[in-house]
Amino acid sequence: MQFQDEGYIVNIRKHGESGVILTLVSRLHGKVTGYVRGALGKRKLSIFQLGNLVDFEAYSRVDNNMLTLRVELKTPFAVRFLGDANKLQALTSFCALSSFCMPELQNLERLYYYVDSFFNLIDEDNWLVHYSYFEFYLLEFLGVGLDLSECAVTGSSENLAYVSPKSGKAVCAEAGFAYRNRLYRYPHFILEQNYHPTDEELADLLKMCEFFLYKNFFATHNLKFPECRVNLATIIK
Image (cartoon, rainbow, N blue to C red):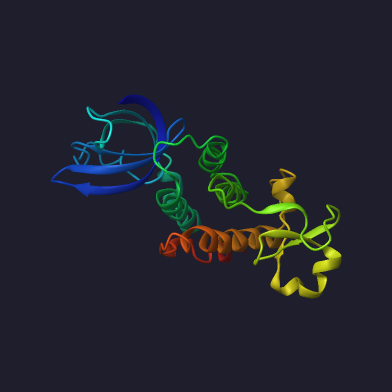
């Protein structure tokens, strides 16, 4: 097996004296994990930082062996996060979710677009909105997305206002108003591709994604939910 691609570093584990096992989220091959020789040398330390975009070549003599990676820095995104505690929390959350949730060597299709947007737009005022799109479409990619097409109670596609935490289905305003404190806000801004939601809309979406990621993926796979992701919505002022 041999291929070339580009990807964002999401996990780094020391292996041996100077090597690392590197996990990347790549454009064409999804999550890629492989061994990098000599990665901990002084001249290379700046390359191997979470969030950096690298070009890499992956190869293995036998298909079921761990890949060996040759890596070159493409864009040093890590430095754009280090000066902001909120951005750094979002980065560590992104890396943890990617490491746990994404399958090896499977094309991410349109999810990679939202990965790319999160990094390339990290200096924009609405950077957290772009992160929220990543989480929303991660649910869809994992096959545990929400059913937001019509009201679970009435079957109507009109005036949808809430999402049920029990079913993950939409609920219209009339049917859900009495239970509104137990429901999540319907994510109109994402479905309408609006990148400037209110703070309340954004916070509610992040809380909803956290809930369904835990319920529909981590709990069902008996995995511990990443602490760095908990209460990410609280960074919204």
